[in-house]
Image 1 (cartoon, helix red, strand yellow):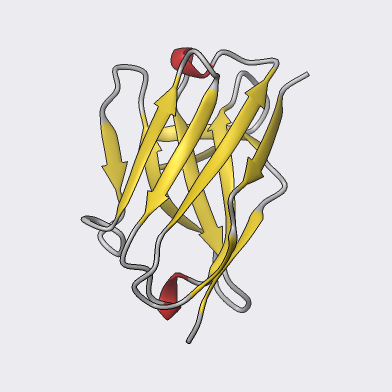
Image 2 (cartoon, one colour; image 1 turned 90 degrees about the vertical axis):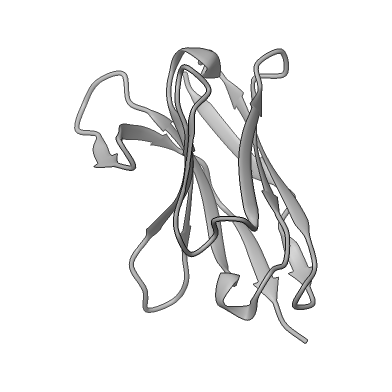
Length: 125
């Protein structure tokens, strides 16, 4: 059974930093693409960043230069380093991994099928 558990969210002031983690079990993350999404009230879910099997990464324009996705294969954990946070970054953040069947959500060049429960990030002065 694949499980994704996010942690690291919280409240920070504008300009601050957070690092989100996503611990994965039942699944070898190095063999699949992984990603981070976010959703704030009244808005659609947005793909933030993705990392692919070969290690290449994608970052949405809204976070490029401020956020960095990475993974530790030995720990089977995905990360999102967030710097220069802005109030517009306030959202629930979800990690996701490539589907191994079913009806995946195709975005950022990957078909995502497994999702974590989310961790809240609030940026406010």
